[in-house]
Every structure is written in C-alpha cells, then in structure tokens.
Length: 218
Image 1 (cartoon, rainbow, N blue to C red):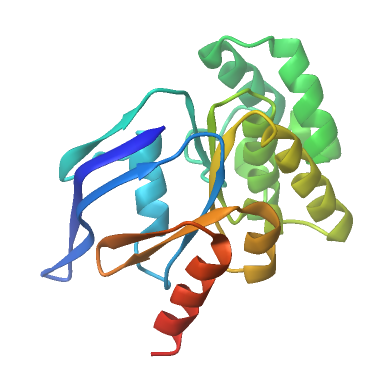
Image 2: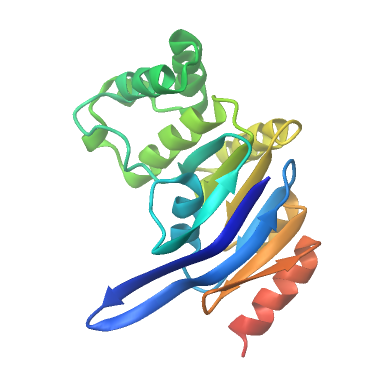
C-alpha cells in the first residue's frame, strides 16, 4: 500500500509557479497494476519520482509499507563511466541481492551485447532504458514504477518485456505510465488520471482511459 498525504509539488518556470501536485490525498492499493494517465506536462514522471523517493515534494509526504523500485526508464542513478555490468553489480550491492545472479539476468534480458561491458555514457537512450528495466525487473520489489520503458525496442523485445512484467505482477504491484492505451489495457487493472494537480482514481482501467480521452479532446 502506498499512501499520498497532502502531497504538493510546485516548480517555478520562467517566473511563474507551476503546480503538478496540489494537496493530493490518495491510497494506492498493493498488489495491483495501476495505470497513471495525464496529458504531457501534467507531472506524471514527477509523481513517480516522488513516490520512489528520488524527488522531494514541496510539502506533504508519501507513506508505504513495502519496497518501491526507482522509476524504470529513469537512468539518472547510473554512473556514466562505469559499464552496464559494473553499474548492475553496484545496484545489486545497494539492494542486497546476489550480484552474479542480477548481472546474468540483466545481460540476458537487456540484449546489449558487447555494450554491456562498455561505459554507460556511450549508451543510446534506448540502451539506457533496457539496462534500467532489466535491473529493476531483476530485483524483487513490492511495487514497480514503470515509465514508458516497455515501448523500447523491436516487437520481440517488447513482447519479452511485457512477459517479464506480467511474471512480476503475480507477486507485486506496479504504477505504469504509457501513452499507449492498448498497452495500458494489457498491463493495468485499475487507473488514475493526473490533471491540474489533482489525482482522480478509477476502479478499472477502461474508466480511467475514458476520463483521460475526454480531457485530451476537451
């Protein structure tokens, strides 16, 4: 379970205040995959980072009784001069999991070939996302935060990504951001829509998508 308590986040952009979370109070249930929808710039990635703890709110707090992954697709925690393999080993030590097992999983999953042993700074954005997704899916979390990453790669890689995700969902939950409505329907059970700093909860993903589409066409 993740609880958002009066969660507020504001930015100052070109002298104006932008609010992406305006006193949000919500309970996100455990063990289900939740689709997070909203227009571009609504603050979806910012909300994920606050839930992960990689960004502080302006006020309020996030409370959780389980482990939460970093936002998959966010590669800011990787050291640019270390190789993919070295970064993976470092993450394994931080989270207290078997280093060799995680390296083997990520090397097989990410399909980076020789680049797995080259510096992270040489990676394309797609390669960085593959590494981040592999590292996250290779570690057991109660809640996975997934930001568009399953859209990276060819059809075979997307299929493999979704298969790994569904396997993890047998024992965990997730919060998923994607601009693909078919993907949202495949991956998520319930949904929520972030609009003008407010989070609107829906007990099924189709209802959330309908709400989102109404906003987009307004």
